[in-house]
Every structure is written in structure tokens, then in C-alpha cells.
Picture 1 (spheres, helix red, strand yellow):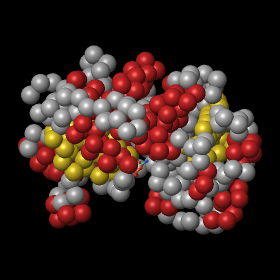
Picture 2 (cartoon, rainbow, N blue to C red):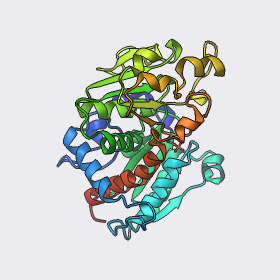
Picture 3 (cartoon, rainbow, N blue to C red):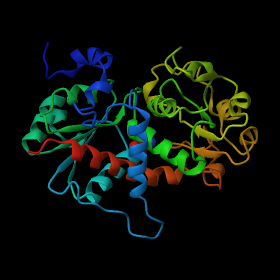
Picture 4 (tube, rainbow, N blue to C red):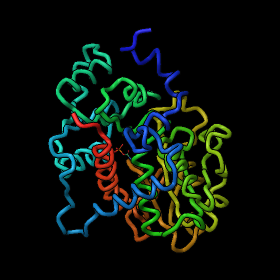
Amino acid sequence: MNAADPNEVLKDEVLKDEATLQLDAHGNLRHLLTLKGLDKSLLIDILDDAQQYLTEPGELPARGRSLVGRSVANLFFEASTRTRASFDLAGKRLGADVLNLDVNTSSRKKGESILDTIYTLEAMHVDIMVVRDASAGVPAFIARHVLPHVSVLNAGESDVSHPTQGLLDILTMRQHKGSFENLAVAIVGDIRHSRVAMSASHALSALGVGELRLISPPVLAPEPDSVPGARILDNLEQGLADADVVMALRIQRERIGNLDGIPGIDEYFANYGISYESMKFAKPDAIVMHPGPMNRGIEIEGSLADGPQSVITQQVTNGVAIRMAVLDRVGNTMAPR
Ligand code: CP
């Protein structure tokens, strides 16, 4: 097996315990690969750290110096606006040198393997690799091959995991609803292909959420037992009944080989769209969330996304704070060079 060819090892990698790999011998976060297996106290600590990095609108953004002298590389092998921009800003606001590799003009286009790309960046003293990839297992694969002082942060992994998104989502819920024990959280849309739903579910489960409901047409439902503790529903009225938090997800068409059976736009919006009409089933003070990017008029009514119940732009703001908290934490865990 060629260790520089991830395709041969990815299937094995995803079966191994990423939750163990991401902690050092003292239980500190060395990499962030998944929220699965992270305990409640660590999740709460990260949320508390992130809260410190939030300032009021119009004020200057919070800054720190914990990454001065460190270098962060953003390696996005899939498209991104929010995650990439917020990791970029988060790294700079902590004093790091931040490199945004343009994958389309990088030597990966000439056949260079992902590990050779990583080794090249390590040789330039990059300390933190922020990785988004369409294939499952890539962040863990890289984490197993980097130097002892280097950290790997998962910025979106296939349909498996998007841990910093999960963290910013639970931070946003906590800001509006306080504790999680009595919350009913409804996540609606393409659950089967959603790394956002997976990471939110892992975090909410660890935090002891009152009830988690995953609502989708049957063709987009999660694999049975893939989300322990969640109620799987295909009826929106039942799914939203008295919910405190409603999160809409887009259909991940880029991950669906065969679109047969996927409802058309009008049918989908009528049955699964989050709208002023469907929000009548939820609690009157329910918040509306969406990880972005949104497809207005398909999974969410545009004016609802801009309305008073929506916390979607707050999720984006929280994304920078969460990524600062995570970068700061792995920076503190790193062995000195
Ligand atoms: N939520 C999210 O991951 O958005 P981007 O794809 O724009 O980064």
C-alpha cells in the first residue's frame, strides 16, 4: 500500500477511533477531527472560550496573540465561503501567518498526493492544517502522518463530520436558550448527506439535549441507527411540534449520485420547507437556524431567513469566535518547536 495515496487507506481510517487520535496523553485537544466522543466539559469549555471572543456589533473584533509566530494553512479541497473565511480571520486575529492554498492552481492538479502537499507545507513550518475534503477519512489520515507539533482541524469531511460547525451551532443555541436539557431541536432537510447534522447531533447528545428530531423525506433519511437517540421523522408537522430550535439544511446535490426520488422544488418546499406557515407548529419563540449556504425558496422561505426568529447571521459571527477558540486551544497543546 502506498502511504502517499489516501484512496487505499481511507476506508480503514474512518473505522479507527478518531476521538482518541484527537486528544493528547493529557486529554487536551491536539487535533479537531470529530465531535463524536468529546465529553461535555470539553465542549462547554470551548463554548466559554468562544464567548470571550465575541464583541458587540460596531466594536472592533476581539484579538489575541496566542498564535504569533505560528502558521496556519487553509486547505480547502471543496468549495467554502463561511468556514474558509472564518478560519482565515480567526487565525489572523490570533496573530498567526495564514496561508490560503489555492487548490485549483496548486500542484495537486499535477498529481501531487495530499500527503506530499502536507509534507511540503510542514517543511515551510506550517503548524496547523485546516482541511476540507469530499472524501471521508482525509483529516484523520493527515493527522496520523503529521509531525508531533502539527495539528489538523477538520473543516468539513464528506457527509461525515463538520466539528467547528457543530460547535458554532450549539453556541448559538446556548446563547438563545440557555441549557440543553429541556430543548426540543428539530433538524430538517437532507439528513442523510449532512455532515452538519451529524456533528450537531454528536454535540447535542453529549450535552444531554431534551429531544433531537431529524426530519426529511424518506429518501434523505439517515441510515438506521446512525444517530443514536434521535427521533427520525418524515412528517414536518410532527417534527416541528413545540420545537425550540429549528434548523433547515440544503439538499447536498453534489453528494447524491442519482437524484431519482428526490422531490421537485415545489413539492419539497410544500412538505419540508421551513416557512412562516410551517413555523406555526414550533414554539412561538423558536429560533430558526441554517448552516449556509442557503437555497432560498427550497428548504427555507427567504423572508423567514431574514426575519426576527432567524439567528443565521449570528451563526456566522459565532463561527469566527469558535474557530479562534479551537485554534487557540490546539496552539496551547502543541509541543514547542
Ligand atoms: N456552513 C458551511 O460550512 O458553509 P461553507 O460551505 O460556506 O463553508
